[in-house]
Length: 570
Image (cartoon, rainbow, N blue to C red; front, side, top):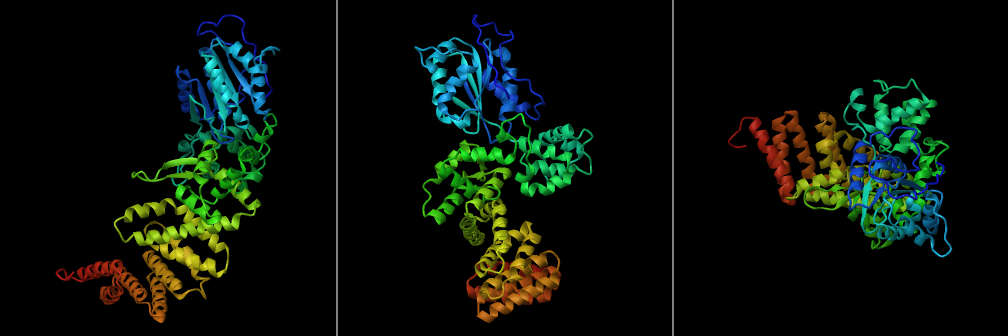
């Protein structure tokens, strides 16, 4: 975008409703999916008390496009004009005021500083300045306060990847475009209601005019839009690839999105031409401490709590003093988002990265040689969490802990995959078995096949590990397999578990294995066998002091008796 000079009128301010002076460029493509944002931010800027509005958001989210549309819509609200100030070409904070003055065609005066000269010229102007790309000169932000205090009719609309932290600032975080829920099978008409899909289609037709949304490509387009987080720049770059690749081919290559999403328009700043450059720009503006935190946060999948980040830091550095300030800073710089509160009890909020940004963080983590210790600490935290959750399920906070584990499902899944990728390493296999053994109750409710797959992979490599770990994983796998309807396989796994627990003389383990055999017999409908097994498990678990196991033995024993017509006894 070429910088245009803006000539301030020498006349008195015009009456509202007259066309004002401006240097806003005509937009070559329509603004898609931003109706709500345009209306809300325009309303904000029209309020007398709102004089500084900052559009924040990660690179490629569409801050500039939104700001240009809002500024255009407000032309008649500013009799002395609307002026676009392009800050992308500069990185020196001292050049902000001269750049504004130069764009406004204000001549330098030897007896005045550039700031004083600017204040003098703007003092009585009803003017809107649109300051684009302020994040690279953010230390110059206090001069904006000076201008606003000196020029009572001036308003500022700023785009920045980072909030300015000024008195009187109103932040407007620009969200991603709406994306489909992949769990739901949407119709073509339904998909066309999502802004990300509409943008992808529009940009696709720019390079392939005969391209349309069809039954054949709908699911792939929905997946692309979701995988790219509804990020406009990423969607535009992906759509441009349709000139040479099919939709399915693009989707398949998104696992390495930074190699695919390149070759943006030549008439934009270089950092906007590839997805990698866009995120790299934000990363390079971080301090060394912020960069380290950013890289470490990339191991979390589906978000995390502040407690989890602090635990990670304590394991890696021995202390976590910096974490809260660092997290706050990354939120301010649009590289981290704060999600909804955990439940209704005022628990910690969750922090999450857009998947596109997280992938860049993982790449940076790898390039800095930090993957191994960070993954190790991440795994340790979630192993401890899962084992605590298994114990807490036996108390009054059962529902709370189930919800907590469900929120951490992505992280737990990531830990298991990482541990299994390490092959036959004994420590990793033992950790995998511990984690699987702690999660069986969670998988039993919603994710039986997933749990079965993880348990079978771990058990296949479990020769030589601690017998008790293998034995517990065996009955856990048997339970899940049985719940999926394969009673014979479930019984075989539980019997193998029983033999191992008997081998090491673990009474509680023997009782639990027999309990699960009894439960399998109950669901199979062999109630006499079930009663015998459940009576045995009841005696063993009472002896071991396992109240939870005792309770389940009694529950299934009573139901088996009822199924055999012994209502009084049951």
